Image 1 (cartoon, rainbow, N blue to C red):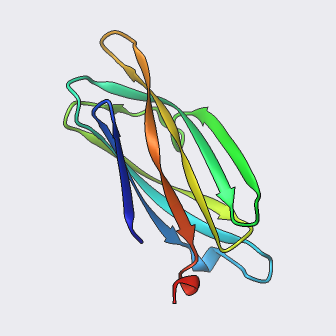
Image 2: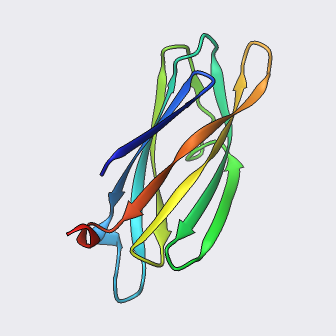
Length: 130
């Protein structure tokens, strides 16, 4: 799938999605997608990812929000020029949907909090793209 990116205050967020056929089932109406997020710190400040806030939309008009501390159980510190990458997943009831959101970051030197955009990315079962 395609990669989407967004940069906010020197923090670049890139997302790639992958359909997880082995975990999905048309009969039970569950479609599982994995997504790989790469967060690159192109600023001059050491930062920590404190919180995440996701908006998840299913093409059947269902939507939900997910909010919480860190990502996959971590609150990573990212040095200037460094990056953090993680993989997570999302289950949809339909064969396509989208996600977007924000990370709350904190500059370690002065504890200033700021939000970083997570670009909107689409999750589409590959068999729909033929």
